[in-house]
Length: 391
Image (cartoon, rainbow, N blue to C red):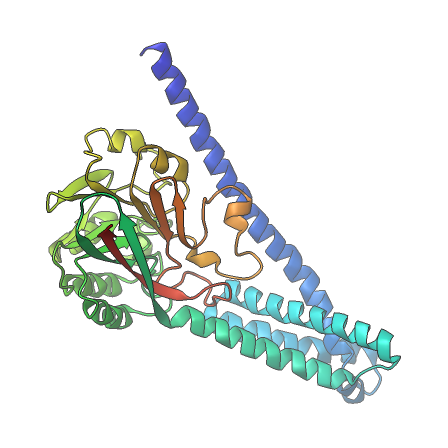
């Protein structure tokens, strides 16, 4: 190994380690803040329910009984959400109720200072609960309904026209099972795509064997000119072992390939002698190739489309002259106010939408479904239709 190569490998190792630390810090910040906020929120909400006049009447003026009565509505909210959607969503719902109540209290404080008069506390409490339910109901709809997002991209290269449909982050079993995924495939077929790309997190640890098999069959029903291509996301191979969901990564690949889906792992394919599709391993894979390596044999006079689940290697992808990069992973930022935490911590280069850097067009999808959290308040679920044409 020469000195230059040694320095390059050392730099890559340091960079990879820095990226891992960045992700660890990001998730520690998110979960740490959630836990701290939850603890403070529980105390705050019990205090809010305690102050509702009806709790005093029901308690007969006995403070311990009043505290118990104040705990009941919070226990119903948290327990009901926990049973229906799990602990994570119970925390999410509780934090939203807490945030809305804080805002209501702030507004009430300002009004009281201006009017020199207290408002009706019961009305305020009911308004908070109703508003929270409506707001989260909209978030539920934004996560569970799938929109169509259109992008039109032009290139100076001799290219003709191409229609791509991008599917990302289906996490089958989260907001829909295989039958719901098949319904979305019917919609996508109606788009008459030239090519369909699946940019990761097709399945998750919670995706059953039956859902994986049937959803793979649904992909096989796609009617395209150039085929269906798949790259792995950070959830596709599972975090908790094959036993938990009943199938291995090899089983997933076998099902996809049996349904004419081409799996790309640091590989490229020249299609119709006019454009390349370059599929990357997920950024979580230590063996993932650098962009310079993937573009070593690429003819840059042809249009190049990179499939990269996580939008966090923009500098390298721009440097090699990629024409387009398609990603997912971020779920569009998921929830207000943590929408851009990935960018703030330097883990992601983008959160959602289309961006041009140099000659490279980057598109990050919010995903066709959702993950553990069943609400999207900072975005909506979607599949993307991308029409490319030369100028």
